[in-house]
Length: 155
Image (cartoon, rainbow, N blue to C red; front, side):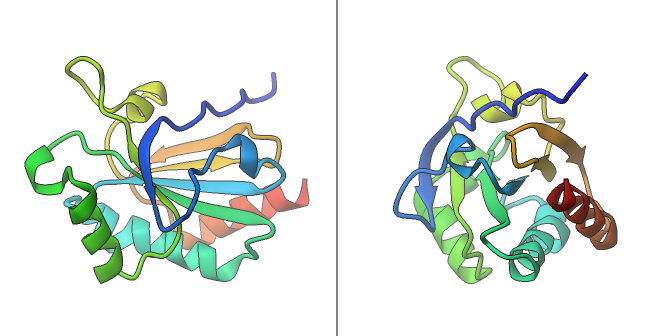
């Protein structure tokens, strides 16, 4: 049974891009989505630098890298667009970053809930046809991720 089409990201705003990013618009490319919080140590030390390395290593014609700021704790400290913009500037993160839409009821943000993410960092790897091929909570080794991306590029 083939993997299912990745659900669209539900965002309220985007940074580092003039237009909202959709997974549908990125069909034809491999898409790496890095879900993070700016107060998450693993996100800052591993996941975001890794996403930046992926963006530098692979052609933007083949691989799209996007971030998803999904705040599920410490809302007052990191829940504003201005705080996120300053964070992205400070850490020189230039790829598009969407802000996960807050839940309509108490609970995790909408995209986080839709993907049943356990926390941050969470990496989503989507193939050229828009199918979710991998979802990983926590760290992934660079060589492993590079090999997985190359495998998807060769399909």
